[in-house]
Image 1: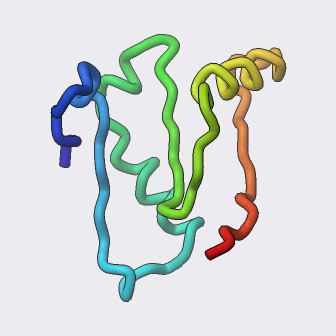
Image 2: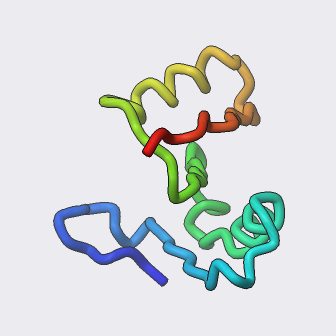
Length: 90
């Protein structure tokens, strides 16, 4: 489903996938499923990026600029940035 437009001018480029937690098969299966349904604009747009986050992810201020900076440091247009988030404290 597409994201709620709200105030986001890029909402038509955001796809939200929802699933029942009881049907979960883990993060690897979730990422494979997400890659299988990439919207057409990603495949047709040079410079397009895909971002996958887990529901427990936290973001720092200017995370998007930091992410693009790290991708640039990879010096590889096919570079992949990945992380294993630290556990959240409740």
